[in-house]
Length: 168
Image (cartoon, rainbow, N blue to C red; front, side):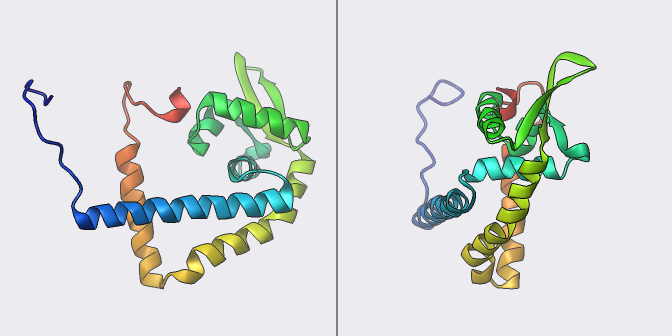
């Protein structure tokens, strides 16, 4: 039912919108699989774990509060906690208590984790370049960047009722 209680017809996708939507789903699914396979082969970790290590490597003192890391990675706190536990088993990350907030924790990239990034980054960059940037013209790359920013802005509302992964 519509907002006024009436039965309104859904706004179906046009044929062109349907083709674009399916192409987007197809490409992003294949890209994520391509990057996951490369990282599993080269470092024994999925793409999302690599992204966490990168985030930590770029943070001051190579550490972030867990809540900030979940936000920057765009994942739920539960998924982050599981990922950090796995990264701790590999000695790539350690958790540290937050001295100013007894409930808070930091995730810190270890020297071993930094070394894994150093070894893995060249292959990962090559996989990204081969799968994406080598296939696009400069104009297409600029357009894609603009499109992705517009989409992300529309999907990341602010306000107290925002339903975002890192708030769950």
